[in-house]
Length: 239
Image 1 (spheres, rainbow, N blue to C red):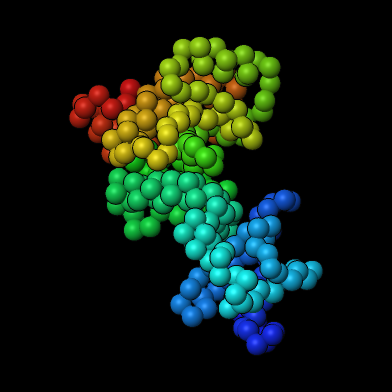
Image 2: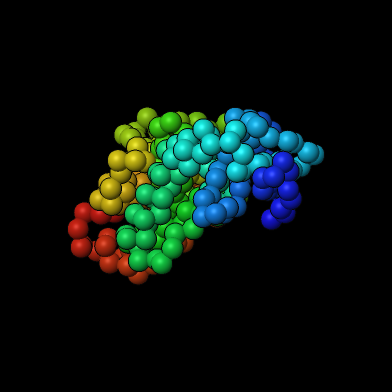
């Protein structure tokens, strides 16, 4: 962190994190025990350079901004991505839920924000999308390396007419079975139940899709002996 003096105050120069083409977030490190996260658009007074912003934190002009910035910041940085306060809360909630269900020490997403969850003998993926109303998306990768064709899309559409509260889609050469839930109200039992529904549907349609349209089966390959035990009679969990 670079510090200079300006007008008798302490000026801190911080890097600007460009989250996308329109959003710029300035992260100010600890000063006298206070951490500020400020939006580059709303945070006047400021002096912008090419890729730095100089902020006089102790200036009286900053004092009205500090409570709002600390207590009600609308933009935060999470895993190097700009997210809303609601999304940040939802992601934290999801991580805690994953840790309790799976026993992992710390749930960490990949570079695209997806979490891998190995639950009851099979692997699912989950992520948080949305800002004002965050949604938890849970899905199984039925297969990957699948080319998109009109025949494939017709087959997926036919399957979707038979699904309730789930959908099957093709994305980036993968066939996904997906279910959604409101992220902020979801509990452990609801997350597990959604995984059960996804597993049932993926098992019901997965083999035929791989046989007819190729690709590498992923969800079936993720199933371990724990999954087989569930299927053999320890509760109506999977097909």
